[in-house]
Structure formats: C-alpha cells, structure tokens
Length: 346
Image 1 (tube, one colour):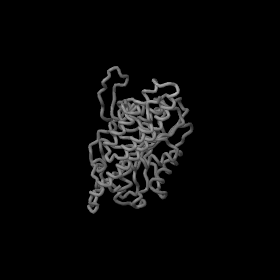
Image 2 (cartoon, helix red, strand yellow):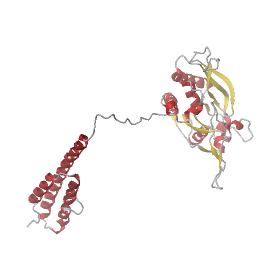
Image 3 (cartoon, one colour):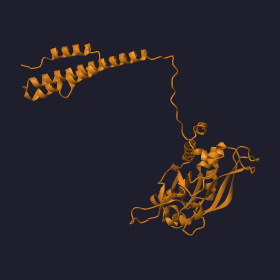
Image 4 (cartoon, helix red, strand yellow):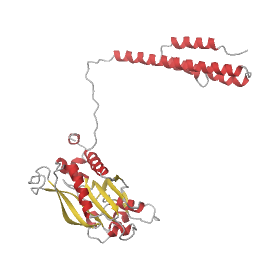
C-alpha cells in the first residue's frame, strides 16, 4: 500500500501557502515542502524502498506536487512583494523634489581617440594596442634611434629596474611613443596590414601650457608591396577632410624623423579663419597637426623583412593637440585636472 497521500498533502500545502501573509514565513514554507530536508526530499529518498509497481506512481505524484507547489509559491511571493511595495510607496511624500544622480560622460580625449580611430577604421585600418612598458630595442634601436643618436635627447624617457637579471633585454622603460607597437606587429605579422595604434606615452618634458610628461598619441602604419608617398598624401587628405571638413586644405613640409624617409610635417588650413590668419593659428593661416613619412628601410631590416620587398607609410599625431586645435583649447593641463566645469563642455 502506498505510504504517501498526495491529495491530502497537496491540500494542506495549498492551505498554508494561501494563508501566508509574510515573505519570511513564505520562505519557511518553501523549505518545509521543497528544501533539502523537506517533505519532497523525503518522498524521493523513499523511492528505493518501494515496490516496482509503486515507484512510477509515487514518482509521478511527487513531480506533480513539486510543480504545483513551486507555481503556488511564486504566485504568492509576487503578490506579497507587490503588496509590500505599495505599503512603502504610500509612506513616501511624492511632492518632495527628487535628487538627480549625476550623469557621467566620455572624457574629451576618449571622444577624440574614438573619432580618429573610427575614421581610419572606415578607411580599412584595424585598431591595435600594446604595453606601456617597453624594451629599449622596440622603443629606440629598431626605430633607427641608437644610443648616440642626437634625436634621442627629445625622446629619452623613464627607465625601470628589471627584477630578472637573466632577462635578455634588461633596459625596460615607459614608451616615449606608440611606435614600439608597430615594431611588435611587424615582428608578429607579415604584410600586407594596416593598423592604427592609440595609447598613452611618456617623455621627460616640463609641464606647461603645451607640454606634459604624459600624453596620448595615435600612430598609423600601412605595409605592403609598392606603397608610395602619393598613397600617404591621399590617405591623410581623406582623413583630415573627414575630421575637419571637406574644405580643409593641406600642405606637406619636409622634416626629419629617424624611422621614416622621406618624412614630412602635415599642416591644415586653419578652420577658424579659413587660412586668413587668426589667434588660433598664430596669424599664419596653417595648423600643424601630425608627422608622417615612408617607413625607413632600416626599420624593416630591424624586424627582418626581406630587403627591398616591402614599403610602408607611417604617421603619428598627439591626441591632446588634435583636441586643442579642434576645440580651441589653450592649455594641455585642462585635460588632466578633472575640473568637471571644463569636461562638461564636451
């Protein structure tokens, strides 16, 4: 004869749950009927002791009981929660003014980085990043800047002590440009590829209105066979016109960078005065925005690319400078002081 009277058990459970008017007591009923030491567990534990004829019948009734009680407990819990919320709501004075939570926003530098990277992504580039702690080889030597090179004076950065004396390259430092990521990528991948690299860089500059010992750069690199300087000019023209407007004019001035040859500084016509001359452009009508050039063959040699097989173009810009030019900001320190009165303007 079956030991469990499921009709009686179910009716008693329904009666207790329906009469329950407190969430704490409702949880106690759930434990009583469905908990690890509850009634249903006791039923399942008895199955091995039952006859072959009783097992399926008891199992079926136990499952029906579990489903019924679970559904009833959920319905009662929802009802009690809503009732409790209504009671609390009735005690609130809705005539009092609310307290608005401050709404954050993306930092202006993050906005500029996103805008620039998105523009280059639309031109077929892929965004990459790399570590801020670099080796001397990646940061200087592979970029054609040996220890005795004059240009190194303006790039020399903050050196770190290496805990492992057996490490092959013991001269670790905070990177002074994002170019080391280009070296890492060229070591890892074979051309063709086109990448744009945003990131934080460090230089031992005295802080003033236009300099900081930490700032952000975005550099780009495109390597393939038969890349020409005309490709570089076309690419940067398209970028500047998308960022500053289709009427933007450009000029390339010869310059020197150890990791590119030939190299150039890129100027755009002042978008404030349309090239006529104003306080923003120093009455010159032009704004300097970035450096660029064709990748120096010595860089390809450092990453062990076959001699003469590949050519490439590279460019780099300061994010803070781009933001200052675009929004007429006259002090780089404003980006890092975290004055919300300034940040809320963007």
